[in-house]
Image 1 (tube, rainbow, N blue to C red):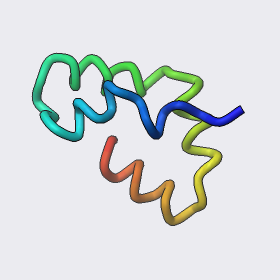
Image 2 (cartoon, rainbow, N blue to C red):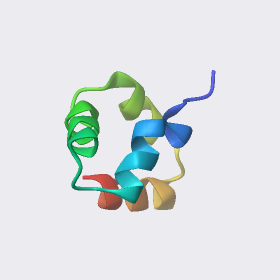
Image 3 (tube, one colour):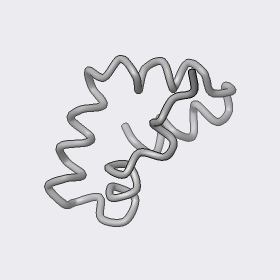
Image 4 (cartoon, rainbow, N blue to C red):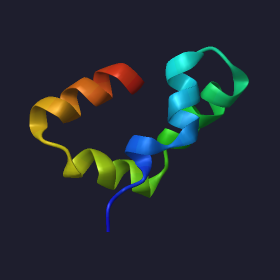
Length: 56
């Protein structure tokens, strides 16, 4: 089953307005979300590093 994290609507809102309340809620959600953690594990090493750098 493919992760929906790459196309998450809250993630796209974060990309547009990182300081909005929705973006802050999504960022908090990342700290405990098992889906996000498995999504990161599924990425190639170089892409994973870029995503972690951008969203952590």
